[in-house]
Image 1 (cartoon, rainbow, N blue to C red):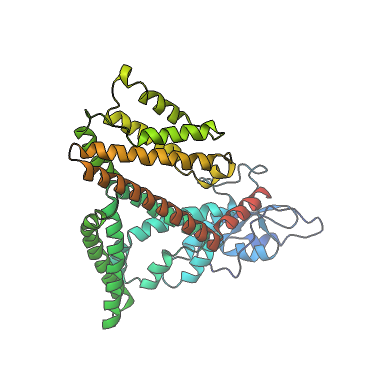
Image 2: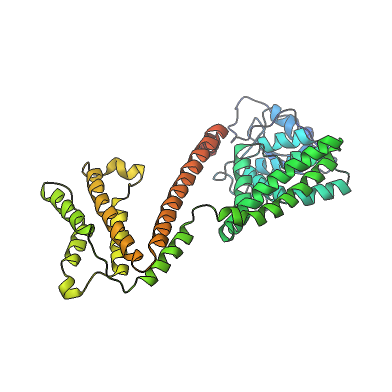
Length: 412
């Protein structure tokens, strides 16, 4: 297909399924002549006849009532080899025709008026381009491309583009974050600070936009490398579940053959059984624990590893569930958890005393405290991330845009 010539629309054609006006007359056939050999797009005229309209004439014909047919059920073959219907193909070619220096506004407008599927593709491309922006800046500087054109080409124009752009960047960063979270976070923070320092230095010397971008890139790369190296030491100061588990496993190995004297646990279990006997809610873990404590003559004493397993199950049963589960749980559940918490604290005291008998009491307390703090930090991060995501969606109107787009597509 010949390449379309440059075209800047006065307004964007409406891409809806055509319903003919019985009394209207179509323009003269000569108006569809294509002397320049441009790419053409099938459009319905006002009398219900299909014409192949040249690229540069599409906007003019749209003003006269011509419309693209985007109904794939009625016209399943009315797509190009890339699977795009006429309106999508035109929008793609319009984007290509309005790229480059001097056409930033037209390019942004074509992005904003593109179908949702094309916006998603464009967002992915902009995410990849943003990750490789230092390379684009260098190539642009060598090719004398204005920095404003590069920056504009990477700017998301719609909520869908922003979601696809951020999602692409997140998907690329996710493996690194999983393998080296400290270095990744440090690199991101350091890169941001370094780019900011580069920008300030460029402003101080009055650098051109192109040179300022290169200085930002250099500062960002240097800051990112430095931040990645500093990230691990800083990360080590934060509570960490994996490190806490390793600490507790060391204690477990040291005390694996030591019996636990259930000095505090025994009365706590008795108190819970009394709570159940007077109408409170019971739980299987206490029944099993009480049965095991009463069977030391037949099964032997309760060793540290087995007591730790009981403690873990008691702790899980006494943990406060999430909001949705609390909303539907029995009214007696909170009271049961409070009474079960007494057993948990008593067991922890007995386990700490047992660890202390082999010189690991402080280490056991350290591991338990770090695990608890790490769990709190993780919960806070999840809550903060959820709130931030909800606020971003609310402010961007992304959900509304997607719903509106889906409704429009369904109505065609």
